[in-house]
Length: 312
Image 1 (cartoon, rainbow, N blue to C red):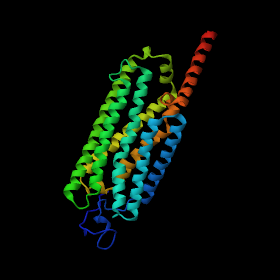
Image 2 (cartoon, one colour; image 1 turned 30 degrees about the horizontal axis):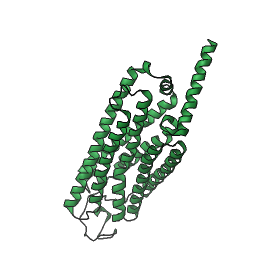
Image 3 (cartoon, rainbow, N blue to C red; image 1 turned 180 degrees about the vertical axis):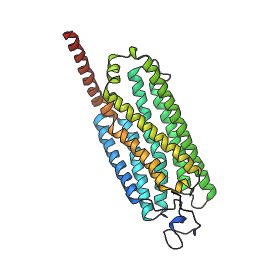
Image 4 (cartoon, helix red, strand yellow; image 1 turned 90 degrees about the horizontal axis):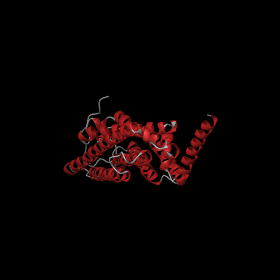
């Protein structure tokens, strides 16, 4: 589907009219009410579930990261709903630009936290980085990406008709997203290497680590983490050419691609992070309640091993 052509409109346009048609806006269309209402409701529900699971299983840091990401996504789509009512709505535009740009940085932080606990469980000695440093390094990189994207988004969204300021904000946003992609690539490479090193040393794993390693629930959890990682990566890669095309560029004026590569990619990411919550599927990451659950499962496994030996 070809994007609608952008046309020149008076600078004082505040609503769609004969002199200010929708094609004169940056997006060139009325954002879909149905899709944006669905996304806002979905992310709002997931934010609530993240709070419930976080309190229940005491996964505080994970709850803060993913919960804030869901809340920002919800707010961003509320901004797009405002633009459905009035595509010239500056407040709605500013809300959705800033929130939807940096929300995935919080969701990525949830993925980074998992590696630390996995390394502690399966073996620190063959990790190239101490477990705590995975959190420090990648969260710091995530924050720097977040600062660049949010600052650039705020500058671009409030630039009005000042093209120089708008371009500066856009360039800062692009730098932040490119940096986020680079960080994701480095993180993926470290995870892949650690998984390989762990697999080649699987005979050295402790009984508790082997029990979790071989459990179906843990494998489902790892699959969910992979889905979350891939969908965030696809979304970030999509955002680069969208912004490189400039405000009102061709890619930015096609809503179907935005729905597919921004909306649905993050829906799949958040669904994986919520349905396969670490408090349920990887309880060693949680607080006292999660650790009690993990200990009960390990104890049950050890009792089964003893019963098998007795029968033998």
